[in-house]
Length: 304
Length: 274
Image (cartoon, rainbow over all chains, first blue to last red; front, side):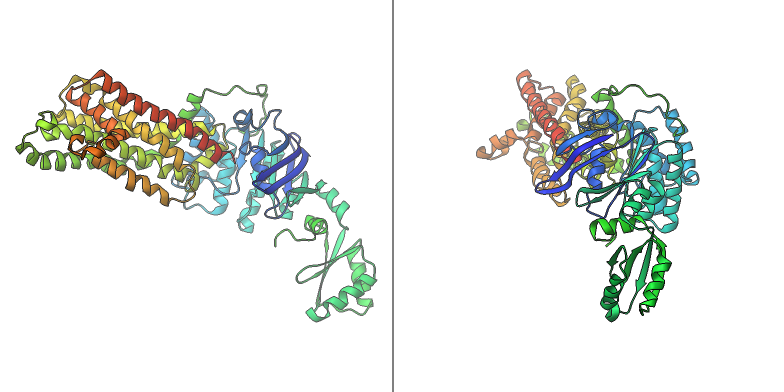
């Protein structure tokens, strides 16, 4: 899969603004960015249901417009919004989808059993979809997207709206797919999701790619190994920030309630802060994450 | 399943024919219909029978007392039965071509799910139409059997009532779906029923001959698709077939279907390929 100068405009609004990327078989590739960064528009173009306004896009060696239907035959898509038929049973949803791909009934039944087992929904196979929890529905959508044994699985925000436990189950299943060699493309605004699942990712903001690399490369390139998070009383905050800047940290960021100080050694820097006569209300040293990369690149947090 | 990425045929793959893909989309509707067919039987089979009883026999008994010369000399119920068949076909077409299509985008989102597969928008459109054809065929067949059982059919031409009724339904279903798929709000779908289907049902030569309408309004009635369906089916049922009229009726309905199909392929594509 290859994109050059890929652009999508809706009227005067440019959702995706000339992005380039290459994607290779068997890798898990992520698009990390806040809501409105152009991730979903990009996913629709990759899913061959949205013609690019400009630029060049090749998927599985084909053209998404000319060969759209044939390419889609080899994709699995997990959309952001559930498109399951809530009135049908779990099994019927897979049956309908398998038929779209022209699979014989016997093969559909066989794969349905395997896939429901894979997403841990075997016990609910004959239940209606309506009462299933959000996490179950998402897992069913993942099972459905695999019914045609796709070469590439495209997931648009696979765990948005799920509770933490349900998210972990989904991650576990996706990780298992990755281990089996399925190519994954996913969008997310959760940095932990990107870190856990993606071999390589791009950080998107305002329709553009701000940075690209492995999670480790991005953190090494755009952040320090450690971050010191300090909280001060509101009235002392600005003074404290000035004093801390005098200690010449790599970089500082002020978020709504905390000061983030980027340093190679967080504990050491915390000591220096105290020696400078500052007493933060709380202090926390942690490793840098993709959230810090994003903050550095855009000056904003991922989830506002 | 997913454990083997076995050797794939070289890209691009040949796609199955558009007909095959449309049938796949149609089969999805069948799975859904398996759940709801019982409740649909009530309104779609018994509804028209009530009309036939009330209008054909009830009202008909009054009409027949005054002589039925202007009806071609047949009892009122014989006159009105093919028209009820056609009205039923129109109603089945409209009710299946609008709300379920809108729902495919906004409610159960089956269109959104289907577009991610190898189906193309036109296949999805034609799959829905095939299901509508099935529904019209079922309802019309039931009604025609009842007509025959009550001796309301006067000609062997009536063997063509079923395809004629399906054609009439398609002439309504193709443009109605083509339009419904473009909507973002469900209210407008009530208008074709309220301001379209109801006046058409009343004034298209259904319950009384158009010759009873004021002269100035008759050309309008002759221009409506429902009148062509009524005229066609009535001639088949009564055996008053005239090759020229049949050609005009069928031609009109075929043209309307073809235009609907042409528009629908475009509106579905514009809607589903954003």
